[in-house]
Image (cartoon, rainbow, N blue to C red):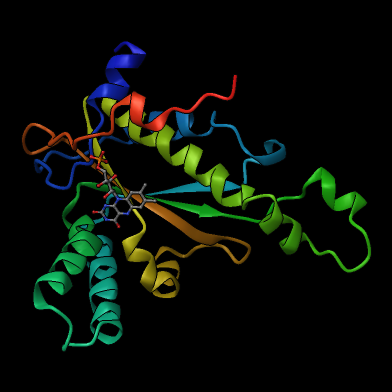
Length: 205
Ligand SMILES: Cc1cc2nc3c(=O)[nH]c(=O)nc-3n(C[C@H](O)[C@H](O)[C@H](O)COP(=O)(O)O)c2cc1C
């Protein structure tokens, strides 16, 4: 598919046909994600592809249980239900890719003055570690469209990060950074309205 078409067709997909996503399709998505730019080309990521239904169910339950503790029952029921749905629907997806991140060594770390830590310079530079993951996740989403699949970027489930990391067997030096639900869309993707370019562009000529 042509690049522009892929970008213009992408929309978050949360309802999927029961068809499985093949290991080859997941591998191609991850291959393309791995081509994304990253700070110092550190490629500080791994992509854990989950298609095991029992594991997905357990992951959904872990998020559900965490939300039950986190969100007081006094809160607006409609909003609680929305948060619950947006954070747990992934459990019914044919596949989920968990993006796990590890720390990176930056060139700047070698010239930091006394007292300025890696964490501080990372924050000053706008969290390049998080930015790097974002680039890779977008590649995953676009790759899904190109393969005739639909996907949704997920950060909501990360409220249960610790529990999910345990279930996924995430390695010691890795942290769960984002998840992507993937599958064949159950119906036509709902495109969200986007601001026109005139509204979001500024020039400094
Ligand atoms: C960082 C990030 C986190 C997101 N987390 C969730 C989530 O937890 N659950 C969900 O259903 N959608 C999530 N989304 C998808 C957004 O809701 C969606 O991108 C937005 O509504 C715009 O719709 P579109 O993707 O169809 O253009 C997330 C998107 C981003 C970029």
